[in-house]
Image 1 (tube, rainbow, N blue to C red):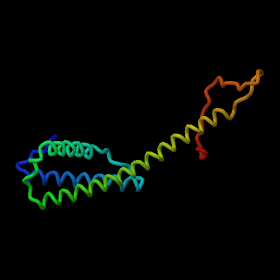
Image 2: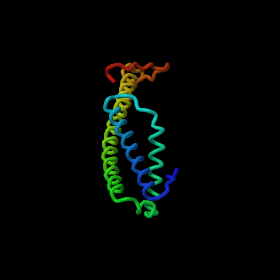
Image 3: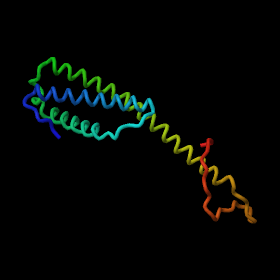
Image 4: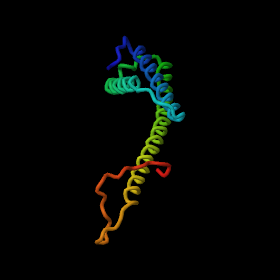
Amino acid sequence: MALIADDAKDRAEQLLLMTERLAALAAEDTRRIKAREALPDGEEKNRLANAYRLELARIKQEPSLIEGAPPELLTKLRQQTVALHEILAAHEIALNAVKLVSEGMVHAMAEEVARQRLSGANYSAQGSLQERVAPNPTVLDRNA
């Protein structure tokens, strides 16, 4: 979805609003992650990020779309873009921490399942470990 703007100033103002809103959404997500709260569904953020990406691509191909905007507006847009990148860097760190913890939990559960499955094995008459015939229920407790 491309922006519908009357002129370069209008386009820059809309892009500034998009940048500010994306920064606010990413900052809120980061705050929620750190507070261990549930995140919203992210539909608005995804839609806005996609529109933002498309608009930046259009401007990169055709710089004249924004060249006529007032210098103070372009300066503010640059500042907000830098702020957005800083917020996104913090958001990425928070998301990577969640990913690391989640992967660690899955790994610990898999190790506990494997440990429990091997712990009750008996030796057969031939001297090898007997395989279980029935399914073995797994109990996850504090060990995982």
